[in-house]
Image (cartoon, rainbow, N blue to C red; front, side, top):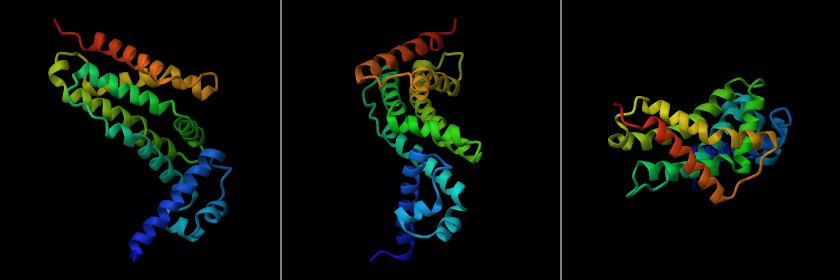
Length: 206
């Protein structure tokens, strides 16, 4: 039989999941605590005691959505791959992740609601883009022998590649003027971005 702690964790997890789904569909202002409690159970007093209120629950929901999205990136196997191959594999998965409908909705929600709840922007950036870029940095770091002569710090290289991947294609999706690319198209975009980055910032220093 679950103890009090595990019951609380299950309850809080359900509150966060229900809240996240509602926030994605309706935005911050379109969701009430009454509706969250109605669908998830628990009580408003629990939300205030555990999360500090609606804004706190919103922030936690954003963090969890970002973590869930990034889980797949942490499981990529690079066995036997060199730097070029590893970056292209990771870049493809980043593009696939960032262009997924739910990820686009999350991006739009976090940016749009930061004014209502300022901490949301920081939470989203820390657990979203910054975390994604950290996977690129890890790959670069594990292949230092292939990039050690570059003039550009590894941390900056990771950000440059991340931005080149998630720039135009994501902007178009956010604006509703883009289409969801097929896997082979995403793979082509990923390879092109890596080729540009490696060709320009990983060349040997004279």
